[in-house]
Image 1 (cartoon, rainbow, N blue to C red):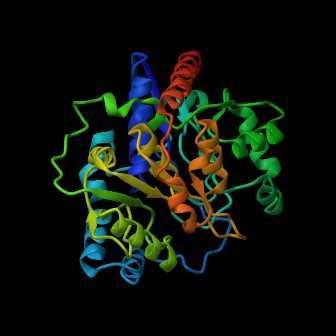
Image 2 (tube, helix red, strand yellow):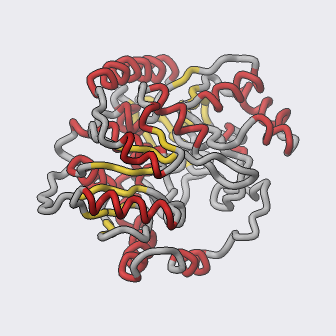
Image 3 (cartoon, rainbow, N blue to C red):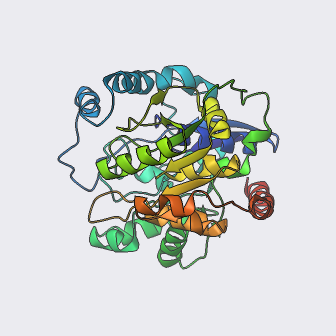
Length: 367
């Protein structure tokens, strides 16, 4: 039995990171393999962010945002307890698993290549590009540069260094056009493009892990990180919910307009999405959770500006690939023009069927 390592964002405390990691592990295990997660050494970020803070300061900072005090306290507990509750499901120990000896190391999925940023929890960490690995073979799956662009790589003079590392990887799979173009320019080889594992794994068919929730009231889900929904957006979303006689459930972040803050397991998140009337999100995985549950949703797209973190690169590509680009809005005033429209999920599922077959073929051939 081959031993496979997955080097990903598995220790990031949010639902998307957990569910993509779990999904990829389960997909790889279908090929009669033993799978373990591998950790990387976090190095110093290239961009100096004056807002970098210790954990206590970050916790206090989250309490300053918009939202009810009770929601803020629940959010702090959700973040503080996430690893204790859910990391064991992935097979993670408190002690990191550095430089594990494996037959094949899979780097991905998630934003493992997003190296030109200020997040001190990720940094400019070259092990995410295969440096100092202890594997017989290294591949990537649905790896993303996030909002790192070729221009940023050139600006920080990292083109040659990243090029050398990427050329040593045996097979490269990315999840978006921005990443595809960067890899092509740095290696002169066209990588394969694959979808995020959450779209591939068919979570909603897994009745043994996805619970049924007995929910009495009708609601919409606002799925966004704390602090990203503006006052104006919150106001318009509140008006929309009131008009449709819906409660607003916030998941993953504290929101000013929310009636409830939901602290639940990653698998329960998918059930909440399944039972929602509508979803409003500005995140990659919030869009994916909506899609796999065949829900009416809109995705707020935010442009990157300077060193600020936008979501345009990954979201536009995801929705275009699934022929759902009409679900994108750049202004909350367009919410009602889009969200009521039906979605042809039969067409989406046809695309997903092809993508699932492509993923399994890629993994089988490269592990």
